[in-house]
Length: 615
Image (tube, rainbow, N blue to C red; front, side):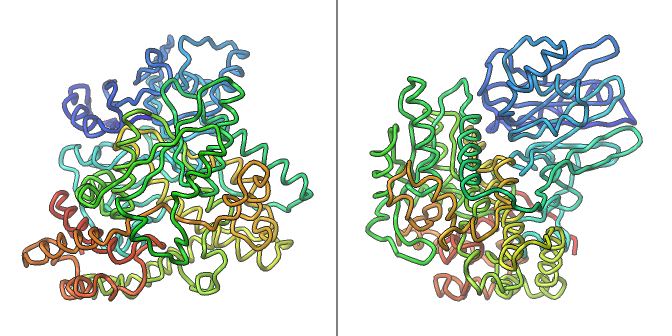
């Protein structure tokens, strides 16, 4: 895993822009703390920060493949899980390989397949390849956008990077927010509309898209999407097919030349990973799979049961450790560190995010990184298999908006009254919601329930899942830790997309089919356990800490947050410990304490990034 940057200018010679490239590349040192590399030509500049995972010597970047007519150069962030299969196919075609890195395979696959290379890849990736002969730049992003790729046009330059902070290092680039940006931040956030950022004129290559830059223009094309097809398999065939895809996806993602581990919460998803990986390692004669679990100081004493978080994790973590070929370490986080990391978490995203839902993962990753460089986690199973409460709750299904973000009135009230007059968040949210639903393909043979659940699955996969994937990438890479997500294999998602809801939610349970196919390999208590989200602190000292932080900010009438948000409403939030904001800010996790922490992040962001408001 790495960080990539670059810029192209066809109008003037930029071979002397090394200092610009150096500044941009160095912003990504946390993504790639092991090596730095550059490539500069007359019209192209490429930078790379490397986190070594495969082939320490042979995987250096930018990687160059020379030909008599010119050269191809790649900068790449990610992991191609089927690179050995692609390599064997290329060897048959006469290609020779000097390394055992997936970077060389990806570069030569592009040379052979051209733009169609994306149809051969299974992995998480964002990459750019420069063809010096045609002076074309090819960029691509993986099926679900696990790896980020941002771009902008400025004056005569095309600029791209793994993170926004690198783009901001290009001379004179503006960090500006217009009405759309503010609507994204406070209406959609911390999710975002695919292809957009909160910053004016700065975009992302959408998941499952590639782009081609030439002297004559810029072209973007979609190469993959979930397609609705009739379900034709028997139940027995479905179970067998699903088991194969699960094991194959997990096994493909175990390749690494550095230490690998898993996150274990004791929930269904992480338990499946730990169990299957443990079995694989035992068969191979390897040591038990190391697992890591996160908790908070005094959390068991202060745990509060809710519909979204019915029980704590510790009992189930211990149960799973006893019933798998694994060794567990617990990471205990305390209130001061959680609050202090809010700013680092905001910097990792380059904008306000998910408050301590982010900062806790950041701290967790930092601890894991001390002994491991790669981890697998159970993210995305809830989206692919139907695991969230909103798949089952009438109030969510009938809300007419994104079911994890129904506090639209409260979001509007949070804006400064003068700004609120200019921005209609409900109108913007409704537009994006309906725009997204129009992409869903409903079949004539779909039952009414399956059709309804296709729509909610589409929203969940393309919006909610993207937010969690972004969280995982930013917090993991900001710690120098690569996070892999086997449940996000596009083949698994394709398959599950067309299974009727009554089978997917077998026995009326969230992730019912997944539970069924794994019932013989997991303890029954794990199989039957209700979904419990990523743990958050219940320690009252955290509420007191973020309340104190926000109170200190609001004691300063010149704090920048006052010009953007509604000061009186924030004071009411402080007075009521967030209870005046009657619904969670985002999903089930961001309640009172998280809302106050988020507001602290907003002020931190305004102070550090100083975005210009263009309203």
